[in-house]
Image (cartoon, rainbow, N blue to C red; front, top):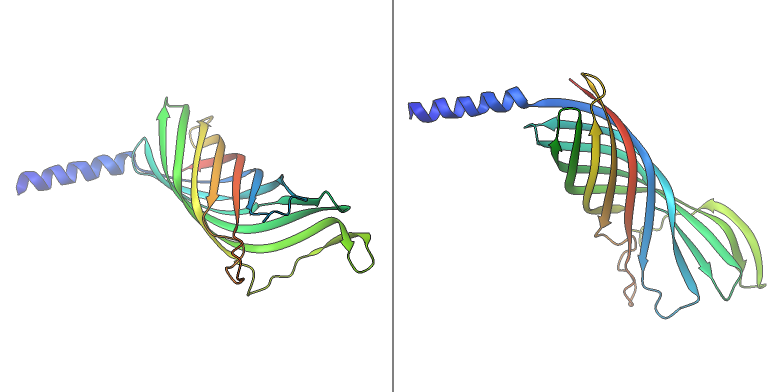
Length: 218
């Protein structure tokens, strides 16, 4: 029993010696792919669009190669909608507040290190806006549109959840400071549209993030 306690205290002391807190900020571009079933309406075209993302991060490094990271991010998950049989071309901008939590695995030297992030995220759909050229089917005439899309509680699923993975590099340019670049992929498993119709019509966002950040080590 005494030997076990000594081993446990030694392991705890080793963990405490290598543990370290850090906080930081990140900003980047979000390239979103809207997954949707067109139900044989082939004249509808959906294209991927870029958006922006930025946020705050906090990380606790348990070991030199293992940490736990959480963020609070504002991200855009945008897409473009067109019809080949009509003069319509609309850009939809969707804003989300997102909370990713992930394990951070790192490798490499003292100053330059690679890392891998694996985890999950929860999010909330804040706002949706449409801009472009739409058509009035009553008079068959196109018009410019630039307005918010109101949410419908029966139709729209504003809560989001999914998984993420990322790869990046970190450069420790000062004793308490480091810069990071990362490519990250968010895979949503929650449809943006609720199952409220007889014909199921799920719609999902899959988002590639290219971001850079800076963090401060305590």
